[in-house]
Length: 209
Image (tube, rainbow, N blue to C red):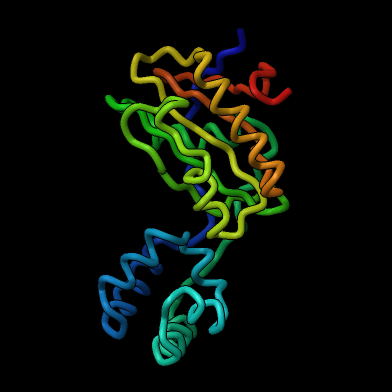
């Protein structure tokens, strides 16, 4: 059985987070706080910054709000640096591991990727019991579809600290892979995190055959 020790985690070098916080605070001065908070929950910062006026009105902003959004975007000091490329499970594990480290409950999230396997963002989806009976496959794909991701990597933790994939993990993985083929969104891997270690289901051929 192949189990990996977790190395030092690194952040995703996609966006200047300090500048984005200033940008989002400026937005709240001209668009309702509730609406801005909802947008930030639904979309990654990178996705929002790449939206056109038509995109913005399509997700609920008025024409005036969309124009104000674009005006603030042009005035801001936001900078986007090259995104991290995922070339192997280790690359994904180093980014995802901090989200699952030392959690007392079970969590499940996805690392969204573009067509070149560059990181677009991470979103946590489930908290609590993560099993085939409680997971709805369509809910896991919603963030990927919303952010126009071409692929994603699933991750969840075992609070027991044992990162050995369970039979239920394999069932969930297989369901996601099959759904991804229909939706043309590739499920690249499923990582299970334990105490400072992780396992790749794809490396073990579980749920991907």
